[in-house]
Length: 560
Image 1 (cartoon, rainbow, N blue to C red):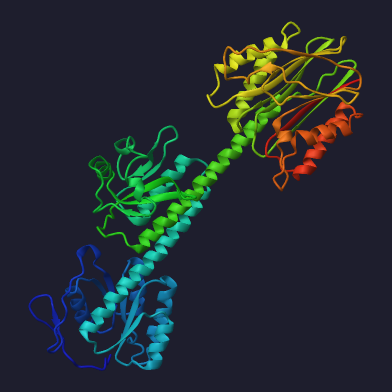
Image 2 (cartoon, rainbow, N blue to C red):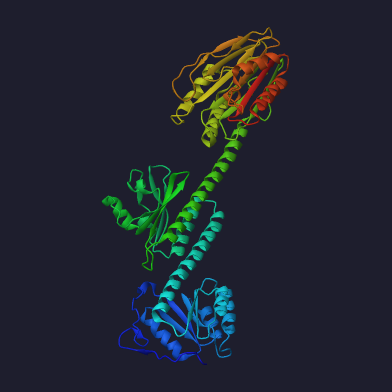
């Protein structure tokens, strides 16, 4: 085919190619990043000239002579750039055959940089080629320096473009994998393996905050036997954490020798913080790239995005764990409450429990000790969640074990206190009120262990608070308790309640308070126990707008 030029190209000794008197730049591309070029032209002398030129400039090359061969090569191998003629044997001047080929290439690989060459170029042809995704256009005969400048630029841009696509795909893939994980350790194992593959790095170690010590320990690792690094930890006092608000390049940093040796052991080139609401919850130690290349801005953005995904995933797993704990704690708490409230002749007893969103430690019980004696108990553990629910289950078990018609309220409180004091965390305690009602004499004997004082409203309107007793349970193992005693008369109403009733707040932040509760009792003194309990519950629901900050629990005793 007529190419439109007759200039001869020849090799001189060494690695440079000359055209006439023009010297070619021999700037070599480092071996680790040698680009691979596919050259397509139906003229063998042109192919050979271009092959030798690119070889001398540090390129690996493959040559083909037809559009079909171009497509075959692109399907079989990966190239950094395609340098192609637009005109082939069947169409020597219009460039249409080359334009058709470009369309096929873009369907196969939309990111491959393409530079086209032709001796019969027109502005219209160049514009059409650009529309087909061509990165640059070179007129034959070419200038070697300009051609190599174009090729190097397009190789760099193409690599950057392909890397961006690769990292975006890797980000999306990891996001999809993370959504399928329900436990922390498998999550970290997926993250470390995924990062090593995406970045083609030697190693990745994921550190997370240790649950029982002030340090970050290894959650997962790839790149070496886990036993080799599993023992490593970084104390919270490490100067490394002063820098981990942002990504840290390890090279050149002046770390203390003992910290530096740890970083060398895990081959760390980068440290990437995993932050949740500004707090460090973990970090990634990423090793060097296998290619020897440095980490660039794209890598940094990718790692920051992944760190954000990890933080979101950890937060979601924590939320799921809290939900599971919430459900389990709620089931425990519900199991503590009586399924039916026993009654005794001449009295009516009603109980209610309104759970809050966060599980508390409220408990109430009504225990029939004999045909003429019945015990009422209400208690509240300081704290929330599973620990509070488990502690309250211990209280319930102790109360049930010791309650009998032969054990007085003060004795029961002392016994329960001794049991609980030996099995409770230092910052926890229980408030409790326990009383025994003697139906025949209408006498109520009680012990108040630091609980909200029950309200006794007599029929004549006089009011009494039941305060006598002693300290809260679980603090003083050998604590002593006193008893109070009151006489009940027909028409009296007794209300036992937890602080979730009186400390409930409305949207304006105002507490329901004991005064409002007392006025509510006075205004509905004529109601029976069940109706009065419902009246109080409706009032606090209306007051709070249905938003309970703590469990609201109550027992109402009405004397017939």
